Amino acid sequence: MTGSTSPTYFDRMIAHTGRWRTIDNITLGFLIVGGVGLVLLIVALVVGEIGDFGHADADGPFSLPAIAAFIGGIGFVGAIPAALLDELSTTWRVVISAAIGLIGAIPIAWGAVRLTAGLVRMNTDATLSERDLIGRLGQVITAIPAGGFGEVRLSVGGQPLKYHAKSAEALPSGTPIYVIDTPTATSVEVVSTAPRDEVPNLEVG
Image 1 (cartoon, rainbow, N blue to C red):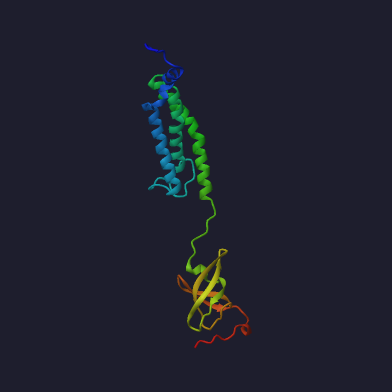
Image 2: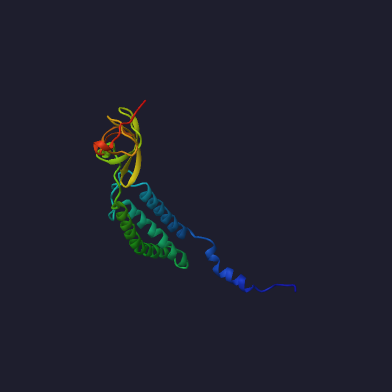
């Protein structure tokens, strides 16, 4: 059949919804603002505070995570009405979209504050120092000759750790020990905590 053809249902639907196939400058602007806020939020949570803006343990409404979440909320929430109200004038679209974005950003920023506060207040183990090993109990796992080095296993924070160890007296494998000094970061000086008659002489020959 030749001649002009009337538009099909799908043609009319595409023509009606064609406005969704492109993003106008106003909507794009709000999305860019949201993206900037999102990037800042990720940096704030992963890397920490930037420069001297606030401080590393800031978890209040003016901390970097809260401000970043607020900016991101304005952008992403504001982009929704900006895309829907494309029949309004530019001024009204910007004003209404910004107002809705501000309202929507408040709970998002509050959530960021709560999240940051939870992360800051999480209990974390302090960095283990050499002095922290003094007084620890453990066991000889490689016999220690008198004046020489062997190996011991210490329980630190519930985790078994292995260290080079020396002792003034020979200590066989399996001897319970007590750390009295830490000559280096990877070695300790120990004494036996076993009754004297339970520590056999270790022959070194």
